[in-house]
Length: 165
Image: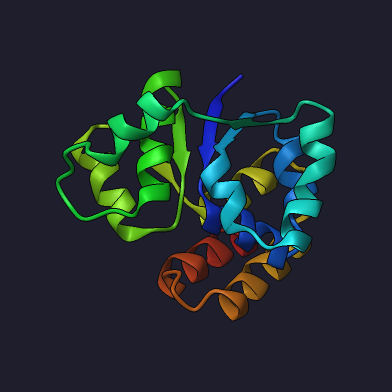
């Protein structure tokens, strides 16, 4: 089972396109940090509660010493405090990071950490046949509408691949 540490924006993307249940059906061991959870609004936190309750989502809490460690952690680019907590946890657990934040991606690459984003997650949902090709294309089209910061060319390329299969 692949261990993943999820950042805020991937959760939000999956919630916005109603793909959260499919994400958890992938069978990943999903972790996040309490700082990620705190960035979500109450409704978004409520959407995650069933997955926390059944053990599919583990929310890490840190000691003061751990917080100080990643607070002063040297990075190759400027990254937010919450992103530092994600890198710290991924390093501890030796897990893959799921994020759409470009600076977090750069830091992951600098640290040779495996990192993927929302488009990859939806592709995995399709590859594992948790949804049909038509449903996957709908998710990707909705993702383009709900998150304008995602690379539309990559979404369109995946849509083209799905249509050709």
